[in-house]
Length: 415
Image 1 (tube, rainbow, N blue to C red):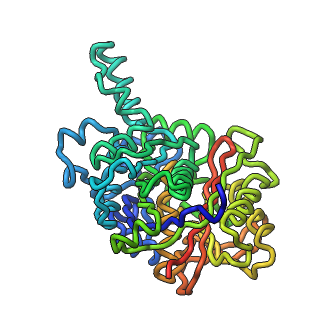
Image 2 (image 1 turned 60 degrees about the horizontal axis):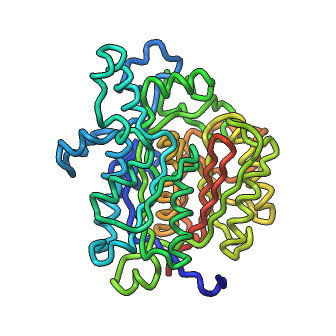
């Protein structure tokens, strides 16, 4: 297919459920005001866990939107995706029923229904096989978020679930972009969802020694690029976007938040959990995304970094950014995980939304808790602690996942 035949793709709807807000407006207001959503975990007893903090949702009640019976037949990660999708579809005002075969759903999740796995394993051990719910498998499998959203809204186009660890949500957005570019869909409900704050998940990450143990001051625990960072802080939530072909959106007078213009995926081919120590994977990914968007490094105004607050990731990602954007004088880079925690498979979705709203509003969200620069991280403008008002035209969002998955997305201000 010739490049000039590719369709332009815009974002016409946004929905968020996060530790700093269960709507787009609340999420954005808290994000630009540097509000931390991280606190002591209350969903289970953390007495015997070295990490006792996380980015939990506050006042989340899916029964405000959907029937209680339907909610109880879904794992939590599905509930989150459903509520975020509801807001996104409502904000886009898209009429899916007019041509449902041309509207798809692609929602990524790294681990799916961990809560269901743990609950049903307990039922098996305590009561035997007959006590295990017949809904166990259709509740826990990661593709069920995209399936539930598809069923509820009657979207009958492409339906898929990338499962690329912490890059899942970004992968979903990129794959949706490609399908619409190629003319294979008019619109796609896309993003990521995750509900990983469970005992088994925490125990696994604690054993791997990847999570912060700054339990005495939760709101200060996630410190991307700061010398005192000691690991990531897990969050939960969902970020959903409505991607739509430009002419389709214009025909129905849709509000356009931004345009998506670049996408790339690469693999490190190095290790199951550690990134390539030279950062070649994410470096190449950013370069390919720029090439895909037909842009130069100097064109990018802001990068929403993966920025997990782990010693290795922040060091490697920062130096890769410095290499790719060497000609850009002190490019603005922030990690919104400092406020939300790391939403795992949902991170790419919620961080794409942060990037889009930064473009639309001319405000760069900060990296909070950035107090002491780490000499091992590249010298960049990390937008420390206070958001910046600045008119920007292009923003990049990076996602990196266990297994060496890298994704870079590029968004353009729509004028």
